[in-house]
Length: 65
Image 1 (cartoon, rainbow, N blue to C red):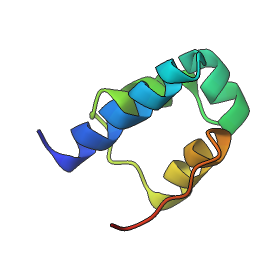
Image 2: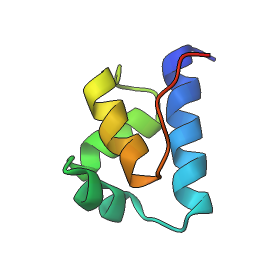
Image 3: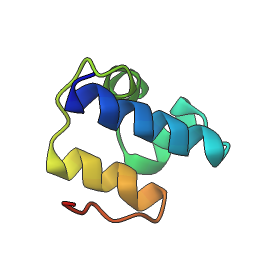
Image 4: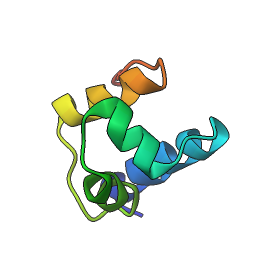
């Protein structure tokens, strides 16, 4: 599994745990739903600005660990 796929999978997990649909996440983050889908599938290399928008919806920080 690539890092891109791992990050996308984790975003999908958090989204499902919080009961938010892709459409709602897109609306709350200001991103397109198709963009969210591609990120979750690991088809898109997500930049830090986009990742920060998604993390903010979930009240999470983007940290390097």
